[in-house]
Length: 262
Image (cartoon, rainbow, N blue to C red):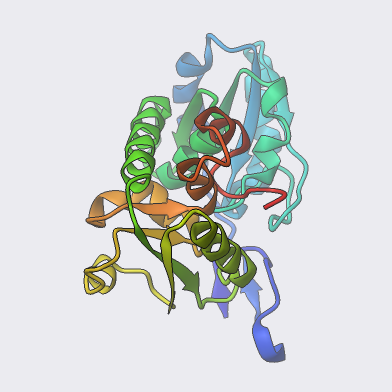
């Protein structure tokens, strides 16, 4: 029983999985109205939320239109089932419209708003309906990206890498891990394959001979939990930057969650 997400993937070995979307019956208007001042400088606003609040998006759109904003909602795709929906690791809906909007309004949690800001490089405002508050998360996204740049620069000097394969359904990117190892070996680095269901700082700390890690499981671990790890924990696209296959500017443009063509 999977509680809190829309259907994303089929479990291995045919094991039945039932998804309960856990829609929230909650008045979102107070939080959205508090976000209006923060959105005032932007004419075209993109909307995003989690599955809990997708049914509230039409109402939110009308509120913004009444204030003179042009509103856009991205089409479903990737692992998301509904228009405007985002996951912690899938921002298909917002990336599809980022060139056509000036800013994003995210209805829901700080975690997802920060992900939208990082994935789109656009000003992003959070309307939190649980606490009835609003805030601009763009500055924090900038701090996260500055830390990512520092981690990449540190990893450029690493001679031994641990390439992590996630064992959870939906997080196992075996081909990407093998490709990472191949690229590292071509660059004259040592590369060890490691497999784990949970990627924890204390688990990685035991591998003292490894200078940096490549995380092919959940990319958000690298982006927001990096401070908990004592050595660089790169996503696959970040590894491409560290090895000189991708420029930092291209990473910011294409995102931290996927590297098409690699």
